[in-house]
Length: 299
Image (cartoon, rainbow, N blue to C red):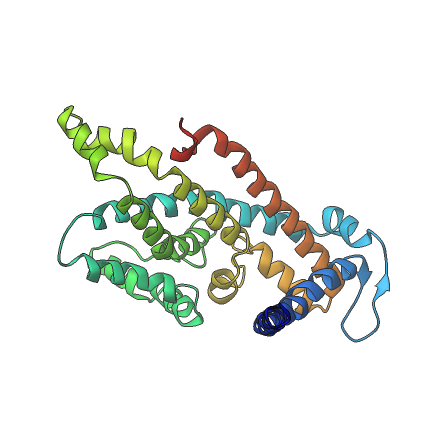
């Protein structure tokens, strides 16, 4: 009995030793920064002197005095509300094509997934900037076709669209998740529908779409959170120009916190965005009862 107890104690110690690095990492890189930023949100802090408690002054300044705050929030909201639905539809459409049986499908899957691996990188952002430059390849193609060149990145009406296009181009991860869901739809359901004379479109809306709604819900939540946290494309391609029409909330936050050394104000902005993301995520979860189908709930 004593030897069993000693063995269990040794196994417990070994288990704790294995998870210790993860626990330390969570405490050092997640918990401490989390609560530190909450404290700094109520202070005036320039990273050179000690934080000075100012209460809710940062939030009052944010809502009433910072004109770029509402501008950047609206740009980010518009980016998210346009990009996310289109990106999900493109992902689902490509997944439907790749769900067919073909020897070349594995190659196509890898090809479509590559942009997601590279899409957020500095190199690809700079490449995208060159593609849509006034003397870039896109305008060169337009010139060959007899179309006047467009100032893609210098025109208020097109600049944000270029960034949205880059975001949509990174559809690979969502596509793979949709593809896995499509593969899990029982073949017997399709066979029964075919026997009943259902067309491919009818089978998609009556069988496939309801079956993959949990995955659609998962992708919707992830992509919404990611869209509100967008940063790289605006910072690297347009720097928020022209006329702040591409100034993402994250870029404005970065500028206030690190360029102008207003770390307290930046922390307040970060916490406001956290609440916004939590609100929209909760809204999606609340709406899921009306459109997400779980087979296990059917009696």
